[in-house]
Length: 287
Ligand code: PAF
Image (cartoon, rainbow, N blue to C red):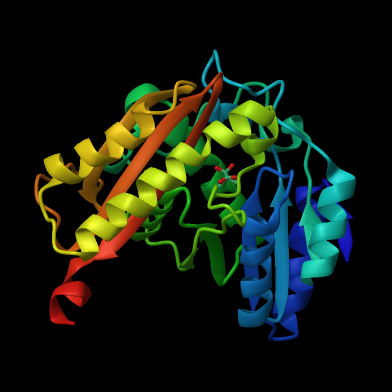
C-alpha cells in the first residue's frame, strides 16, 4: 500500500491503473479511522480492482466555533486499518495542497443542505460538497463509498453527483454500531466514561422509533415525541434536532411515507453526536 500527499502522484497512479483496464473505488474520510470506515473500504475492495482512501481533515466544512483544531488525527493508526482492509493508496494531503491561499470556488447542493444539520451548520455541506467534488476530480473513481450514518451528507452528495452529471456511482453503506448500540464515530473519543454511557440515549431512541414505524405508526409527531422523551430522560443529553424527512430530498414530512429518514443530533456534554434510521415504507407496506 502506498501513501502520498501529492495530487500529482494520485493522478499518475490512477492513470496507470486505468491504462491496465482496472476499476477504481474511492473512500473519502477525515481519518481517525474506525470499524465504520473499515466496512466502507472492505466493500470498496470487494467491488473494485483498486481502492483509494483519502485521509484529510477538511477545514472548510468546520464552522468558526467547531472542533477543527481538536479533531482527532492518527495517521499511523489509519495506515494500519487501510492496509488490513486491503486499500491500495492513501491520499493524505496537507491543507495547502488542497486549497490555494486565494481559493474562492465552492459547490453547494442548496435545498437538500438546508434542514437537519444544515440549520445549525449553515456552511458545512458547502464545505463537504466542495472537497468531495475536488477529490472526485483528483481520483476520478468509478465508485465512491459513504456511510449511511451521515444520512444528510449522503443525500447531498447524491444530489451533487446527479445535478453536475458526475459519472461516479455513489454507494451508501450501513451504519456500524458498537456492541451496545452506539453508532461508531471518530467523535466518540471525546466522550468520558459517564458521557459514553449517556450517549446510549441516541441509539435507544433510534431503535424505539424504528420499531414504532415498523409496527405501523406513521405520524411523525407521535414517533418523534416518543424519541424525544427517551433522550430527555438522560440528564447529560441536549437535543439539537429530532426530525422526520424524505430520505432523498431531506424535506420535513408529517407522515412516514416512501423512503423515510428519521434523524437526530444530540449534544452529550460538549460533543454533538448524530444517528438515524431509514425505513422504506414501500417495502414495509408490501410485506
Ligand atoms: O464524512 C466525512 O468524513 C467527510 O465529511 C468527508 C466526506 C470525507 C468530506 O470531508
